[in-house]
Image 1 (tube, rainbow, N blue to C red):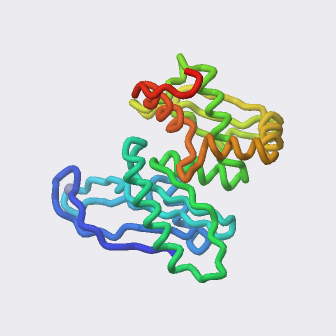
Image 2 (cartoon, protein in one colour):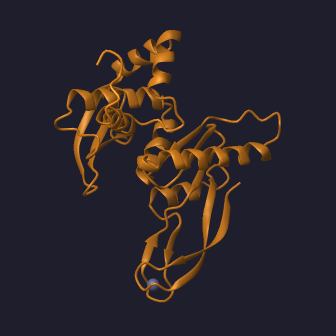
Length: 238
Ligand SMILES: [Zn+2]
C-alpha cells in the first residue's frame, strides 16, 4: 500500500510554514502513476501557496514493486552518515517485518542515499540485472581509471535506456555540477561471464564480502577503503 503523512515544512524561498502531505511509501503495482511521478521528478513535489515556488522534498521513501519482489529504501543523505542511516534503516526494517504476515517471505531491501541511485536501482532491477555484479563492473571501471574517475568526484550510473543486448551502458556524473559527462560501455557477454563466475560458491562469497549490503555501492566502498588507508590502519601485507 502507498502511504502518505502530514509534514510541517518551511518554503525554501519565502520561508512560510507549510503543512503538506508527502509519500512515505509507494506501491507501484497498485499505483503505477506514482512510479511515473518519481521518474519525472514530481513525487513529493510541493508548490508553495504563498510565493508559487516549486520544490521537491527529499525524504525517506520506501519503493515497493511486489510483482518483481523489489523493495528499495531511500534515505536522503550521504556515505558520511552511513552508520547513522544504517541504524535507522534496520529499525525501519524491523518495523516493516512486524506488520508482515508470518508466512510472508520478505524480499531483500535495497538501501540508497540519493534519488539518482534510487532511479538507477529501479531500472537495474526491472532489467533483472544483479546489482552486486553491476557494482563490481563499476569497481573495475574506477580502479582502472582512477585518475579520470575519482570516486569522490564522479559517480558512475547504469543507463538502462541506452543498454541493449550487446552492451550495458553507463554514464559518468560530475558530483559537483551534477552534469552527466561521459558514456562507458561494458560488453553484455562479459557481464554474463561475471554472473556465471559469481555463481560459484567461493566466488559468490567473495562478492558478498566486497559488497555486504544493505548499501551496495562501488563508489562508497572505494571511498571507505581510501579513508581506512588514510587513517593509518595498514591492512595485511601493506
Ligand atoms: Zn514560498
